[in-house]
Length: 100
Image (tube, rainbow, N blue to C red; front, top):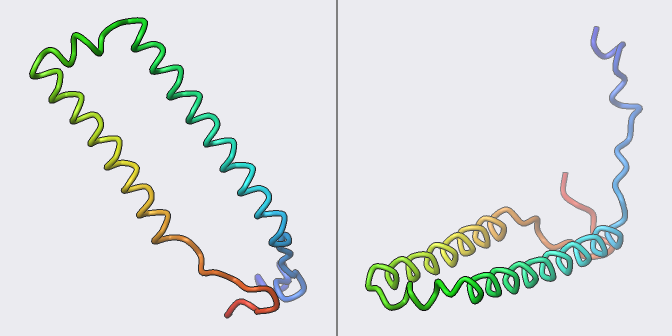
């Protein structure tokens, strides 16, 4: 009965061209890099104006907290990169069809 309501055989899926998605990925990557650099600059200026880094490094607990923060940032970046690498689609070459 559902085949009468939704004719799935007659509907074809249309996918965008690969070149347009590459342009989108490139522009998104460039935008993310620029925003990340801007964020790093703004945060470093804020830390320099607040003069908290000097007081933080003088104390042993502050140094440990700073090292822990750096380790946490690097670890989260590594986890994200590993997840992206494991879930990335296979490389497609022009003229080859995808397996069904």
